[in-house]
Length: 388
Image: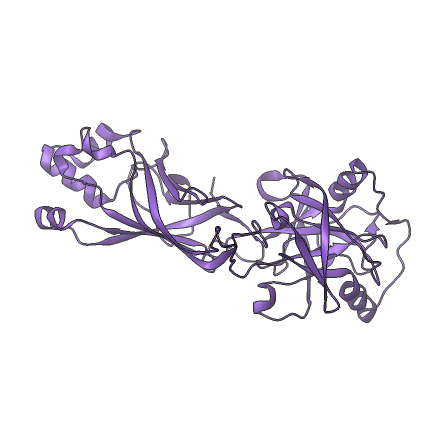
């Protein structure tokens, strides 16, 4: 079974820490000193300086290793780097993995399409600036092939024997001293980040993703060149939904479709991809539903071939008549595939609203709307949301 990478299109992660496109965790050193007190100590593998560079545009994490001079001199090492595929990206956790074809050839997989075995996983605790590397039992050992080769040579054993001897052992934790690309939590400065929300009634209620507002003290929206503070009413972390309210009567709101989505159905998305760094004009594009399930068989989601990008989170996905079909939430890493994104079904949104004692406007009949009217509806009901 092939392994695929999921990345969540984050808008706002928390109020005082936003993510830039490139995040660097610098001057990272081992916390648990694995190699000083075990069978690796005779290899001379000391605590060398690591940098973990997270590139959101390429969905890659690069580990840059700077070896100490005595280690370089003794074993002929040069500074090196490993690439990992970004697997998941949440408010306080970044996860990346690398894959191998199988355990027999002990081969790292880089820039390949066939991914069958997880080799090892990198988890970055953003808040604590802590990086954990763990090896998966069914993959290759979490060391470079060069390091394994040196172990085998020093102990006068075969390459596979060196792997077998240390299999299941590799689990290291690094603490990073510096981080670039995150907002200054103490001063309250933030990097550019944003999301999308939309009105669901004329009382000022809005829907967006939970990850857009999670951790934010006060979220604001831009509505026809004016800023408004919102009140957070309720969230659902499992569905990744948030309900807000703002003190205004919108010019329009989005009704819900009473029909179940079907494959190949035309759908339209509105939102603010890349926030205002791209422009403050609402972006609207269209595509089709390709599956009635989302990532890992999530029955609360649909899969669409829409062009969804960071900043689209929480935006409406509607049918040709401007009725809600889903809420934009996530997409597959574009280095793995293209045209695979996900939306939370309107039926799941309906249940979320009913629990919060709000009845969505569900159209029992579908009135035909031309492109101009649908565009106007989306312009008047969809908003840019950000953290104060």
